[in-house]
Image (cartoon, rainbow, N blue to C red):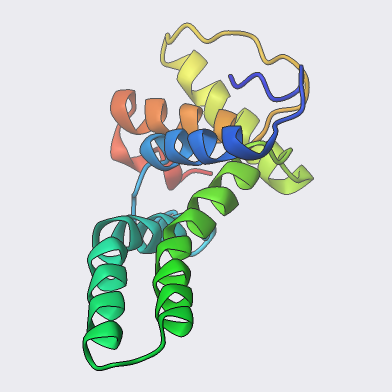
Length: 151
């Protein structure tokens, strides 16, 4: 369970929470129609991998062709900011409380884990998306793959 209910999250912590959320969220294709996380995580990972070389290339290319340094730097900074925007969004999403429909589903998955004999920590406060990601990751590891069919 995340500790978002105890204290507010400031700017730089959001990036760390976004990375943790991206690592925790199960990338199962059956979750994609319901949650946007699969697409955001995939695009953010792509940006982390490819945007720094794109930024360097565009900066060098524009300066080599005799372009002005202002627009070249602005273009490079924009390319570098794209993965940060994804991590920021994931961080904000991880501390967002679950809506009522998803909250009911969260408790159903927890119930299935408890019925399977798994020891779970009690829920403190209102569950957020990080708690859902932790629960889903555990469910995908320890329950059979059909646990989503019944819900």
